[in-house]
Image (cartoon, helix red, strand yellow):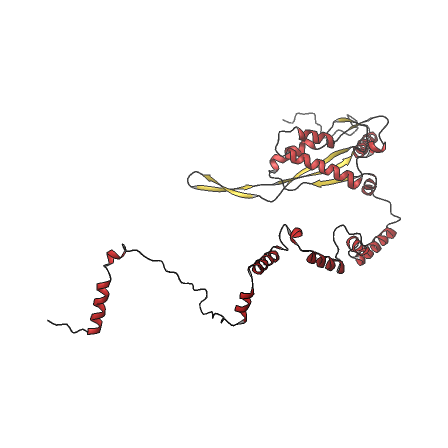
Length: 330
């Protein structure tokens, strides 16, 4: 039986099979790794006599090192932490000339134009506001001051609020109740020896409010100016306690309250029977109002005066007796 196959195909197949081992033996033969550089694919090399090749030949080793050093220097300048040390004198001189040529308003400048721009950014609005206030004073000049206005002119107060603290209002409100009605020094002492975690935050807030009240409003300077009372005055506070006041400018905590803040985050709380709930991490803020002891002295005097103006209380007032009968009602 004969096969009809082309003689050229049969000869090619036979030579390939004879020179190639079987498939299971090919994995035992040693392999040679072969790599091709494809990054210069399609790029023509410059001829030997061209300008690029001649320039490369003329560069010596030292010139190439200088070029690499200059390139690294330019790359590190501007954003490096050693910017001032690696800058060359020419570049520093150029930058100094540019700064002197175009001055800009920087912090701490005393230039007249810069100061006016910072203190009076909108002159037209300031003129309108002053004009409005002058008209208000002329219109209300003959009107007597109200009680609230007289109090604000004679007494001082300072309000301060803390940033959101990592606690809840339920825990922070106890510290708020503990400091209200006490002098600032006594409240700070209470927070200093308190075992509560947020006591140190409340202590810091009280110290900050005290310093700002002294610096911004001039409160609590009676002892320094010699304005103490010759004889201590005994007054009764709003909660019924009797205290002695020697300095009418002593700071005390008149009001203190707690407000809710934004949530810090959440976590999952797992329950029985494949159930879960969301636990939100709360924040709270404490606010205080500081006043001077002269406010409590005025409140005590007003209370005593009001009680003195009251009419005497009559145990059995003189009024007709009605709805009386001689028989029992049951």
